[in-house]
Image (cartoon, rainbow, N blue to C red; front, side):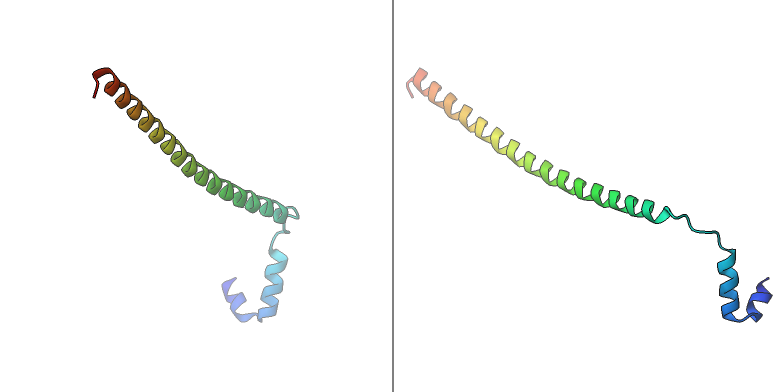
Length: 85
């Protein structure tokens, strides 16, 4: 078979290969498009979730720091009032 392909003209080989190949699934392009679109949507959503998680981390950190400062100042004031410092 390989010897026959070497000797045959290129157009004849292309026509022969085209006739041997199975027919394409008509829905394959649509399914492929939907798969790629779903992957892109998932990638974008993952990026959004990561950004939101970073923002949540900093907000919680600032709130905890504010609560710690408030408790420290309140405790300091109460200790000063109690012991007359």
